[in-house]
Amino acid sequence: MQQHVLDLITQYPVDFAAAILLFITWLGIGVATESPPAGKPSVSVLMKRYRREWMRQFIERDPRIFDGNILSSLREGTAFFASACMIATGGLLALIRNADPLRGLTQGLEIAQPDGVPLEMKLLVTMFFVVIAFLKFVWAHRLFGYCAILMAAVPNDARDPIAAERAMQAADLNITAARSFNAGLRSVYFALGSLGWLMGPWTLLAGALVVLYVTWRREFSSTSRQVIMRSLPRPEIAARNAATGSERLPPPP
Image (cartoon, rainbow, N blue to C red; front, side, top):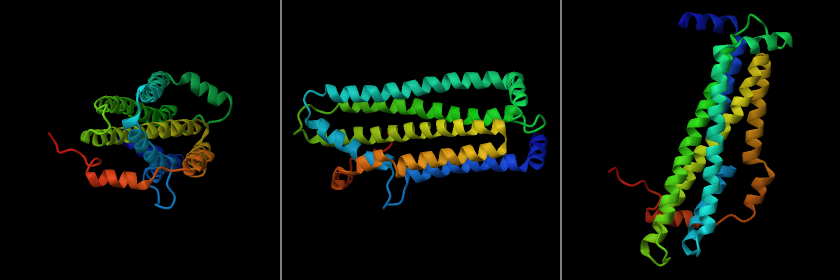
C-alpha cells in the first residue's frame, strides 16, 4: 500500500503538490485567524471582547431569558452543522465504496483523466475535512452546554463577589466553543474546495486559493468587520478580568 502511494506521488506530482497546498492553506488561515497580528485582529478575535462584554451585562440583566435564547440559538447552529456533516460523511463513504457512478460522470464530461489519481483517494481528502468539521461542531455544541450551566450558576445578585468571576468563566467557555465552531466552518469551506480535485489538480489549486481568499476576506476585510470595529468594548475589561485570575485555568482536580 505504501509503495502504491509513493508510485502515485511520483507519477502525479502536480496533483499531490496541489493537495499539500490545500492543507497548508487550511492550517495557515486557521493560525492567522486565531493568532492574527496585533494591529490587524480578525473578526473571531474581535468577537471575544463582545462575548466578555455580553457576560458582564448578563450579570445585571433581569430577567435573563434573552441570554438563554441567544445561547440556545448558538447550540442549534452547531447541532445543525454537526448533523449535516454526519449526512455528508455517510454519502462520501457510499461513494468511496462504489465510485463507479461518479467515475462515469467525470469521464463523460471529460473533466478528469481516467488513469489519474483514484477518485477514492480524492474523496478521502474531502471526507477528512468533513470529519474534522463534525468533531469541531460536536465539541462546540458541548462547550456551549457547559457555558449554559455556568451561566445558570451565576448568582442573581450582581453584588455577589463570585458573580463577576463566574460570568467570566462562562465567557471563556463561550469563546472556546466559538473557536471550535469557527474551525468547523473553515473545514467545511475547505471540504468544498477539495472537491475541485475531481476535475484535476489545477481546479484543486484554484479551489484552495478561492477558499483561502474568501475566508481571509471575511475575517480581515469584510463589511461585518467594519461594523464590529465601530464601537468595541473597552479592552481594559478583559485586562481586569485577567488580573483577577478569572481567565486562568483552574488547577487539575
